[in-house]
Length: 250
Image (cartoon, rainbow, N blue to C red; front, top):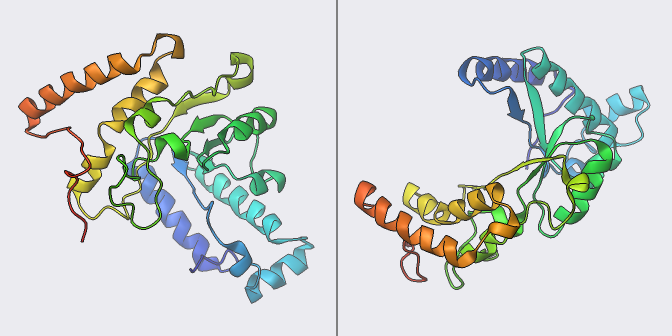
């Protein structure tokens, strides 16, 4: 896996050009920078240019280089009237990479409760995209193709998402929304993508908008049935999901 080298001037010319294009195409004030799974230990940590730069600047480790990198990216976005969003990673937080007010996403399975606590203390607006509820590229019925590694997230599991994870408002008022996440690299066609997105996206939407005390799994299932009839009539697309009717994978 290759990463850009932050110590090469042409990299920053490239990012400037990309941000200029984004500025003109997309009206949103937010740009997601990503970078959470970048293997810094295998790349920047050993890169001769980065090693020399860290020594020159007196940086103790590669995370200090990353902090500078992300700060420069944020400044470039700010100059274009935009601000960054980032995935939340505890090592990044411990390294001081996030700036107060940065919007972050919780996504790692099982870590959302602790992330809610940490981001509240750090003053970071939080979006809930918990992997165990919100990752819609995962199969939705046991026994369907999991590409050799994906867990199964059923419709009911998606519907069970409680964005506040049962905590009082004073502990969760920094949560600003939820996200249904769809990574398409494992899904070869639009039919595969639509099949896995729906009806779970409907469950995530209701989980995000509806207080827990007025939610009903049985009532939601009735609404899905109503939507199925409407979508079938209007778009000739069937929302029925069974173990056998997913489009086949090569």
